[in-house]
Image (cartoon, rainbow, N blue to C red):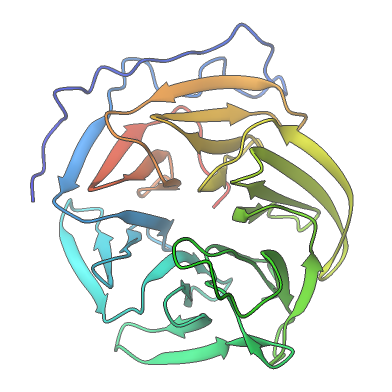
Length: 296
């Protein structure tokens, strides 16, 4: 695997002439002169990036059944093997790592010693389809999507839905059931807003979180679906599509479009200052220095 600056690193920014969402927000989300950097490649399909407390970035190679870590020192490490096709990853408030084991139809918690604990693996007695992405609120409540990609002829559930698992609970609640194929999911740090990307429906929605596991006031944020989603410190929403990452304000204004050499599947902010956008794109992991920090 290579650690090099991509020859295609000249970033094509499509920054639009729109006002920033607040006076404090910089005019450009990307650092001046920043270029897309290819950190490492040779994977099968990278997904699910999330940074730990120090800014090291964990990500999945789904078909290879591995979770890797890209450290702040620029080293690639393998965190876990035999992951059952783990896709989305997220740390809770205590910096415990959770993952969506799509191949096993479950959500698990894992530690650095290789211990894996099943958190939830069924809804009303039937297995999940293939948990894809998750977000954990400050109290430990888990919101996750459950679509399926490939072998859709015999799914255990009656559709593709969004679920919530309360802290300490062993059974999940179905909270959104009217999307075509929900995929990327993220919530704001204050726990007030949930974003869900309907990948196949080509739409991304925002919901008010009125109480833990209760959402209402569904509204369209972007006429674009997405595989992965993340938020920056200003609450701007980052979505993937084609070879681009597109950024929307919390009210749905398109703020920027950033092109990458390969089609991004997901992204997260990481690094010691949490101001580097790490992007999983097919066989590779890319990085881009930003002018903003991540919410996570």
